[in-house]
Amino acid sequence: MRIVDRIRRWLSESPDLLEDAGGIGETRDLPREVMRREQHEADRFLSEGAKSFDRKKFRTVYGILAAASAAILIGVLLTAVAALPRYGVENERMDEVADYYIDHALEDTGAVNIVSGMILDYRAFDTLGESFVLFTALNCVLILLRRDEPGEEGEDDYYDLTHDNILRKAGLVMVPSVILFGFYVMLNGHLSPGGGFSGGAVVGAGLILTAAAFGNAVSARIVTEKTFRILSGTALGFYCLAKSYSFYTGANGIESVVPLGTPGSIFSAGLILPLDIAVGIVVSLTMYGIYRMFRKGSLT
Amino acid sequence: MVFFKIVLLLLLIVCAVSAAFSKRLLASVIIFMAYSLIMSITWILLEAPDLAITEAAVGAGVSGILFLMTLKKIKRTGNEEKEEKDENR
Image 1 (cartoon, rainbow over the protein chains, first blue to last red):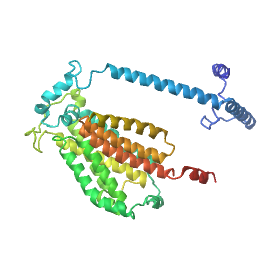
Image 2: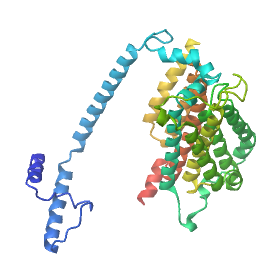
Image 3: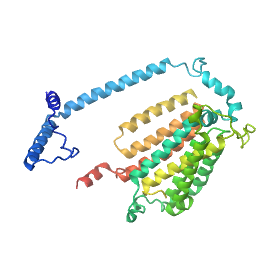
Image 4: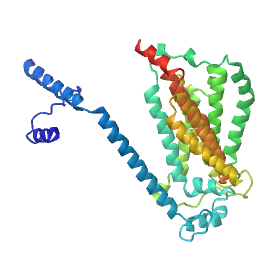
């Protein structure tokens, strides 16, 4: 009946016993004795709660509730899956948009890879949001992990893998091919499977491998904090300039000034290639930046 | 091919369950990376090669590395019991 008691206290506007217990509430100017008495009362209140807390019972109830909610979730999901049309079967109601994309994407966007045409032309605005989500994630990591004190900088020996022979030799073979493959995927986004995000992720993984295998000196030559700022800022700004008109047109596309070119050649598909490059730069720098923040506490 | 797909799906389930129930965090992370690799093969079989590339790079590569670095930071990679003893000392 403690809850009823607390509600009654709350209704009668007496001060909450727990308010000051965690040091969260405002400090009030009260005589020392009153404060001490209140503190004592709050302590007793808390310890009584701790005593009456039955761990075993809690575990049982928690287990039952967890199992029940998992079972309900599984049931709901299975019902939803059962209601879906069979895999690969035509469904007129649901295929309307997909059919439109398949029929018109090539002439509308000029991209042979329809997926790329979808995410960077029809739905480029979504991709802009995704790039900003990544950028925001990097900023949050920066806020949390950045070390400002000058003396604290420098890597832990704990992570130093540069004397690891296997990693170095494997890195010599892997790094060029991984980064080259990443750029290939990025630049051919409108022609073959892939695109800015996949290519950027591969390039970012290659940069991380470089930093891990060859140490800070080598990776700092490739990406410095200055290039980091300039590149990601330019990429995001370019993307904004190219696609933020969707705000004003209500997510409708407008006539592009960039010619679509011959489908299948590398300079085709209008804005898709530059947008792919911008997304790739943002994604790769974000992956690498998060790794650096985790490892060292600064971007380079 | 159907047999291969079934084996892959079973492996997915095994990996998912064992990643959740494994006692050692390091083992969990490695199982999770294996899960991502199997998932990327599954994406290829489902004819989504772009997703396969992303899954292999992000799931098996970058996020696994970030997990490992976090484990290093909180010093949970090695023998758990020994580390707990060290902490208690």
